[in-house]
Length: 379
Image (cartoon, rainbow, N blue to C red; front, side, top):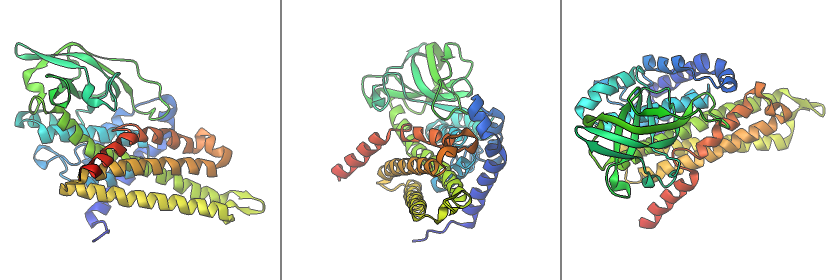
C-alpha cells in the first residue's frame, strides 16, 4: 500500500495549482461580485491539457486517470471552486463522447473539446426531475433523418455560453431504458436558453435553463446506442462526483489555510488567538476532517481507475463525506475570522457560498446515501 504521489502526479498538481494562483485567484472575488464568466481563462486550460484530462490521447486527450483528475480539480479550487467545477463538467462531457461515442463522433467533437475550442455542458436535470432523474420528460422523436427534441433542462452550467450540449432525452418508454443521449450544437434552430439564474454561490459561472422547441438535430447526433443514455449519464457522474468533491476539498483547504494564518495574526486578550486551546482544538479538528476526506477521495478515485466492483459505491461515499466535511470546515473558518469572515474582501464567505452547492449537485448527498445503502443491502 503506497500513499505517495508519483513525480508525474506531483508535477501535474503543481502545474494546476500554479494556474489557479496566477489565472484564477487574483480575479475570483471580482468575477463573483459581477457575475462575470471568464470564458477566455477557461478556454486557456486547453493549452495545459486540462480540457480532456481522462480522454484518450488519439483524439487529443491527456490520457490521465481519475486520481490525476482529482489532484487537478483540488488544485484549481484553491483559485476558484466555481471555475474549477465548470472545467470539471466540461471534462465529464468530453469523456462521455470519447467513451461512448462512435468513432466519427469522437473525431468530430473531442479534439476541439480537448483544445477547449468547444466548451461542453451536461444536461440531465429538468424542472420536474432532479433526484428522480429517470423520470425526465424531454422527448426526442425521429422525423425523417433527424431527431426532433422538445422539453426543458434546468440548472445547466454553461447554458448560453457552451458550444456543445449533451442532453439526456426520452426516445422510448418510461424509466431509464427509454432514455438516450443526444449531442446538440450551439446555434441549432429550436435551441434557446432561459435567463441566468441568481444563485447563492457559483456566481462566476452561468447557470440557466436549456430549452428545446422542435429542435432538430441529425440522426448521427445520437450518442452511442439508443436507450443507453441513462447508463452513460450515470457513468459520467461517477467521475463527476469525484471532481466535485475534489473542488470542495480544494476550497475548504484554502479556507483552512486562511483561518490558520488569521489565528496567528489576530490578537485578543493580550495575545494571538492561536494560543487559545479552544481555537487550537478547532484547527486540529478541521485539519483531521480534510485529511480524512482526502484519503477517502483518493481511494475512490483509485477504485474508479481500477474498475473495481465497488467503485460506484466509493464514489458516492466520497462525494457525500468530502462535500459535507469541506462545507463544515469552510464554515468553521468563517467563524474563526469573526466579523471579518462575513466580509467579502476576505474571500471566506465566497468559499462558504460556493461550497454549499457541492452537497446538492451531481446527486444530492441524500441520494449518495441511497446509492451506498442499496449496494450494502444487495451484497
